[in-house]
Image (cartoon, rainbow, N blue to C red; front, side):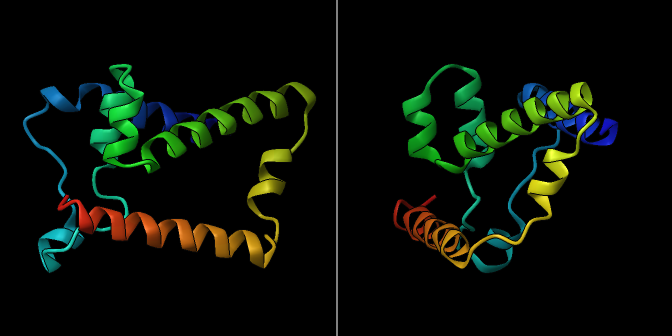
Length: 121
C-alpha cells in the first residue's frame, strides 16, 4: 500500500516539476515510427488539468483526465482499505473483467489513437 502511495506521489511531483526540469520525456514509439501512440499528449493533458483548463486537456488527450480519475479512485480505495483493514483495491485490480468491458477499453484506446494520428499530435 505504501509503495502504491509512493508511486502516485512521485508521479504527481514529476508532473508538477516537469516544466522546469532540463530533461523532458518523449514518446519512444513516436521517435521510432513517426506515428503518435495512443498515450501521446497525456503529459501535456495533465499539465493543462493542473492549470484548470479541462476543455483543452480533453482535446489534447482524454486519457489525462481518465488517468487522474483512476488515480484519485485508487487513492480513495487505499485509504478506505487501510481504514477498514480490507483489500478491495487489490480484488478489483486482480478480478477477471468481462469481455464487454475489455472490448470497450480496446475500442476507446483505438479511437484515441486514430484521433491522435488525425490531429497530427
